[in-house]
Amino acid sequence: MSPRNIVSGRSRRGGSELRKPQRQAAPTRRQSTREQLLEVAGQVFSEKGFPGATGKEICERSDANAAAVVYHFGGMDNLYREVLQEARNRLAPSEALAAAVAEQTDPKAKLAAFIGCLCGSCRDL
View 1 (cartoon, rainbow, N blue to C red):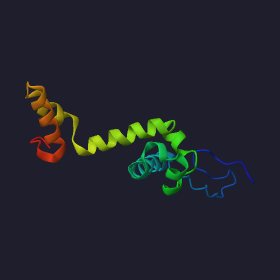
View 2 (view 1 turned 180 degrees about the horizontal axis):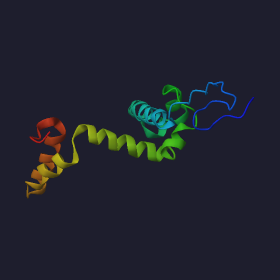
View 3 (view 1 turned 45 degrees about the vertical axis):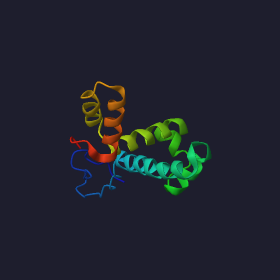
View 4 (view 1 turned 60 degrees about the horizontal axis):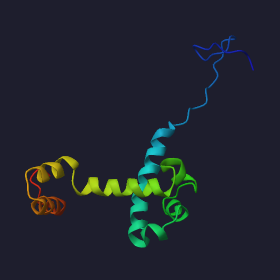
């Protein structure tokens, strides 16, 4: 193999050599695996509760490596926290909840506003 010119990718003898195609960037893969783990974990936690859920089952259902829960979340506790946070974010944005509760002064009214917002009656949603 002849030495190549770094800039052009051609050998000094004038012939061209094909460069190997580069792999796609890994972050896209990790993001989709992470999102898939969150989705599947939500299903498993709702079916079996936290005590009955295992990282192994979540990874198998997600078609992910068995160590993916630890890699992406640091363990089951953090995965559970993230699933709960994702569920809350999907139910109602924080700003809408805060606005609905802030308008009330009575604790019972605050709770009613909060629950009403979760049920879809927030006007900011």
